Image (cartoon, rainbow over all chains, first blue to last red; front, side, top):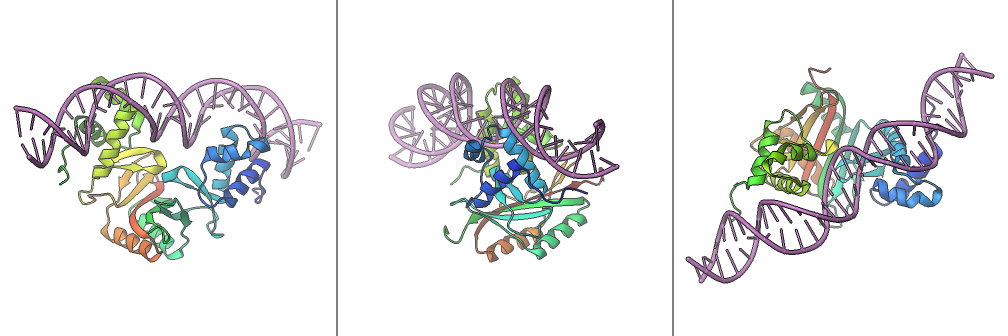
Length: 130
Length: 130
DNA sequence: ATAACAAACGTTATATTATAACACTATGAT
DNA sequence: ATCATAGTGTTATAATATAACGTTTGTTAT
């Protein structure tokens, strides 16, 4: 059995920072933030990020090369991710919508692929910025 | 009025290569391919790529940092892009589906954003690979 | 035709993002 | 206890992307 959900020291440090952040964080900005805690190298960050993504604790915003904490308890394995991204203030909002997710997964099946996951990124101006 | 759709020399060179390619191309692999034509620096490639994207001639596959030619004549301004990506053979297929596009644009509006565009990437195994 | 402007160009340098490789350590299972 | 697995720390380097600068070319208006 896979070790339930225990995080290693570095994974916990990285996750904490991402969870506390208001918006998406870049790998190197995480790195600079943890150097006081004895983490010195990009590898240490990227390794933690990879595992956290695998566990569904965080997501990567591909268009920004940045990482956000997962807010929806039910996206265990991150098969279906969707985000609203404000082009002005950089805010990122995770969209958790069962209907959308169902619609998209079945849509993809029709197209002949063996579906594994999707990632959807919306761009525009958020309520505040528009 | 905006100059219709004339491509500059470098833009044409870059577009030709992307259109001839079977799959997505990375910026530096484009660069290596055009050095015989006197293009020597990444800037030259990235500038052409930026313009081609603006014109809707190509799209960036964000999860791969790679570029594909646009095959759907009707996505003039690339507001709504969707791709199927095979995780095994790296094949990328542009999905052009008016219903999907409509569904997603209106979905986003409901969420309170001033919608500009979206990008959707499906991952899985293509017909050949599954 | 020519002046004025915008777009594209070429170039050097550098920033940013990400991975390779290797030796070592901790943990859990049998 | 030993074996396998996951995690650590480190150095080095690869891959992706942009800044800044001066020049050239193409377009438009006069």
